[in-house]
Image (cartoon, rainbow, N blue to C red; front, side, top):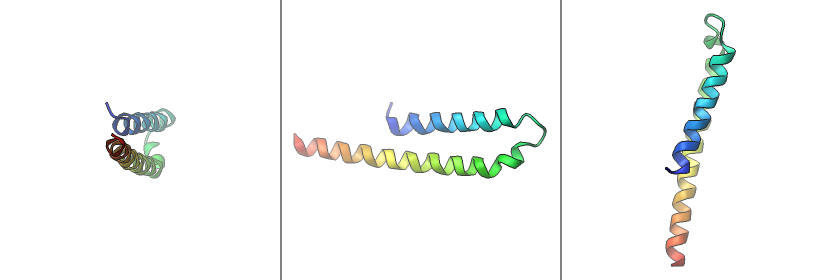
Length: 65
């Protein structure tokens, strides 16, 4: 599996686990909703950056052959 797929998923799960664990109280997720949105935005940006990096590496490897 490509790094651009599993790394963002791993970070998203880790971030969600932190928010769920710290939100044991009733409706505590409402306090963390902005942090969760920021976490998702970072994960999406990471996915696209890693995907572009892999494309550049593939292009560089194909030129060197």
